Length: 297
Image 1 (cartoon, rainbow, N blue to C red):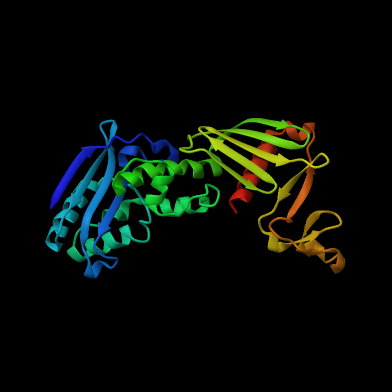
Image 2 (cartoon, rainbow, N blue to C red):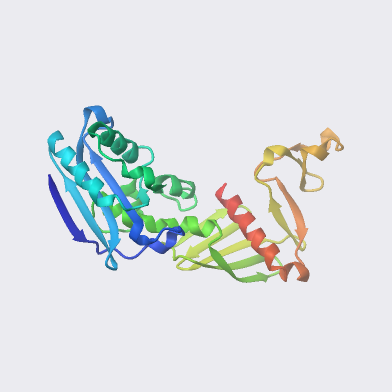
């Protein structure tokens, strides 16, 4: 077994996770194996990145035989026994089950029992379309971020900065301004975490752009009214004559010839955008969150 230890030179990304765990208890983990099934394969390498003495550091264990595997896992268990939060890429489906099975086979203590898991593949997959990602492979995300050449453990660490996009869509922002330009509502949000790369996305009728710590959203206004969309469109009918959607619970009172099944694009109602509405911060914030959920759906 060979153990290689070095400080990481990658930038600080931890604040974008919005977790209660202190960074000293957070572990980034990546396993490389000779196969997919634990019974007929073995570990080639196991890498972790962890925080200590004010910086992120990396340890890589490697071995070229099954005999080295037990040493790798034994040393790994001793090293990570105090950690409580584990970050992986597709780890919930591969790395963690594989390592757990190996640890059990060797009769070693399973440190993952006491760890909360964050699988970045699962966390970032909903944003593939919005960010126009070429694929969800870790190497392709690293290319999208224009990262330098690095191993998969460091890629995992660097790509975790993309969690800031998830942060933006889940309410970690401050409403900086809301402007009624007569034909559109223009929102500017200050994000808690900076975005690693600029993006823009159009899903009619809304448009957004994100750069650095700012997210801007444009929502149309038609005849003094804005559109509120409902995600559960299968529960609604659209009334073309009135250009609005109604819930199925009340559609029984509407002639079938005047209604049709709503689609994601027609499942909306209209509401007035007036001075009272523009002064209602809670209503504006809720509308922003509704738009973000619609863009993400």
